[in-house]
Image (cartoon, rainbow, N blue to C red; front, side, top):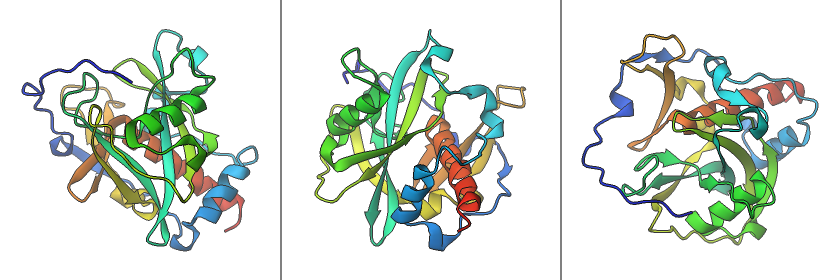
Length: 241
């Protein structure tokens, strides 16, 4: 995906420094569940699992692209990989020279092109282009609800399993860094800080952030992580694990 290059010198917003409403009081997922077998079982039973999206963002999720036809269709890959005997999720830090979301932490992904057969196909293509993982090493497990970003994108998360044999290679035009975060860290809501945007008075003008080794996961990316927590928490109950 090509982007217009822009200067970043004027950007001063620090998401981690904004006023904090608090932390979340939900319980973390059981540590003994956070393995690839549980993740696979959870998404294998998705037709039976009853769950709700993050209530603070109820206004910002839809099920179909057709629900918001004027927004730009995009897809991201929530890539789950086993590292050091536990599941991690792969993230990127976007190049400071991009025209959209420059310097932010995100999932691999981008616009759904007309040549893409589906959002899943777009997520896999973009993952290959951005971080070098070839599609044959990615196993799509599920599509999560579409997040509507403030920048007019409708973003479909595609949860995928990464199989051994893949190679990581950052596309320097788009990606400044590739890193991964343990699923256990992301699925602990005590790590999810809630911030209020200082120039909004509306109650819903909040966002989540998650710190990991000096990096700030926030905004749309953190909202998708938050939804993944709600889904896997419901799966824990349903599977009786």
